[in-house]
Image: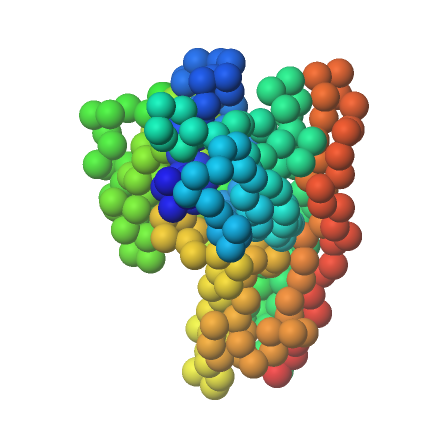
Length: 296
């Protein structure tokens, strides 16, 4: 049961967590429970979760019992945070069930509260040739978002092919499809990736696709040095290209060799607010730091 709970928690399958709740914890419908869970992940910009239960004192018979759990959440822009909680289990008709509270997910979270993320983008330093030509640099680009319920299903394959081409075949058709429809709400926009090339008019023609300002990273070829590329080193990213200076690091070439100098960090905050908009908990509060330029 704990293995299944861990899996559902990591992938945001709150509708499946609902099936393992004790009867007294089912105070809302399954659909409302799922919506709140997905909205919380979206508001906190959570992209990856790791869950570790301490089962050293787990009993097959004692009911109720509490199980310590450590959860690490990786956010899209401002780093990670950790929660140390205890999950209470009880037996109902011979099966283990969870006494659930949204504070199990994140401390101080409840059904009448919400999360808010504010981001101040930092820049990764530029790599400059001897004549000061930028071989690699952050620039003003866009994030592509898809709202599942607004997409034209008849043009889905056309859209996925275009995205595949825009990201130079680095993210597969099926990966974008999975991110859009795999575990989503029809009215909740999903970030797909940060472009590192000009936006095409064709992309703008698709219903359900929106663009927001975001820093991207672009390159110019060099016949003298291997400039390299950057990759997400904070969490496994299979189905998107969510470039930020916080989560991406140099993978090879100068990007790798001078990573410590080039590295920047986004600033911003992640807080929990009550329904009146008052802050009840500050989870993350990060100061922005731009990386340094490197001249070859």
